[in-house]
Amino acid sequence: MNAKLERIQQTIGGYATQPFPIFLMRHFPGDDQRISDYAQAMIHFQELFDWDVLVIHPPSSYAVTDYGVQSVWSGQLNGDRQLTKHVIHRSLDWTEIRNLDPQRGELGKQLEVTRQLVGHFQGHVPILMSIYSPLSQAMRLSGHATFVDHLRTRPDRLKSCLNILTETTINYVIALRRLGIDGVLYIVEYGDYGLLAKAEYESFGVPYDLKILGELEERTPFNLLHLRGNSPMFDVFKDYPTQAINWNSHADKVDLVQGKSLSLGAVCGGALTNGLLFSTPSEIRQQAVHALREVNRRRIILTAEDAISVASPLANLKAFSQLRHFQE
Image 1: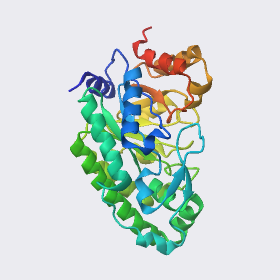
Image 2: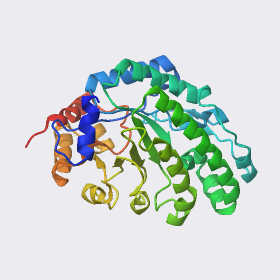
Image 3: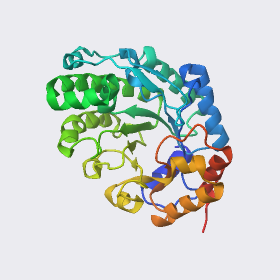
């Protein structure tokens, strides 16, 4: 086992580690459209900061691009691409979605990026692939308004699509495992009280999430649950088979201490995405040190609540990376 993965597993187990495990993730707009450029951009990012986890974070529409969804990067600071074309318009359209071959198209491109990164780092850093939940994929097929309308008016048709998206994602995850990844960053966007009722997520989200995560359970050592939104349903996710959880602990009523009590693994936080963009290195250090002290320096992996801005100052990222050596 490599030293970085061992340190992460010790942190998950509640042991004090020195240095602290730490990482940030980001999009690479432009470079993410070509396999070699994307792999090289990620290699440079990793070698510059020596993160304890390398998260492959393609555009958020990558899993549904081969269905005809289109997107463009038009300067968004987070580096993600904006959707410009959806393929679901009528409720019947959900029933026409078919399985994708994970070895072809955009999925195949990301497999090749993964193969190059795994080969380059040779097990010296844990590598995770970002996997969007079937609900998140479905939303990108249709757009938010159509997605929510069909979820509530034609649930049978939406669920037929969710089954297909889940099967394709499982096949993709199996292909990733064969390449030697260490786990996934599993992204949930609709498990939030501001978007759906709890019963809705339990019906349209949980069964499909657990099928995918079940394919990873006990087969990959480090799977990280990433909750987006300001009011995540912690009571729904507390028993998910993942080793760590990441959410916006600054905006949500659940802070790091409470999140730690709700999770059997580690909590991930300590930095604000906007803070890494707008704060000074000193302010970033103060915020992260506060987070470490808040949880008694146990079961915490230092990171931001989401992908960092592509405009984040180099000095801020260096200051954050150096916090791995923090001592009282």
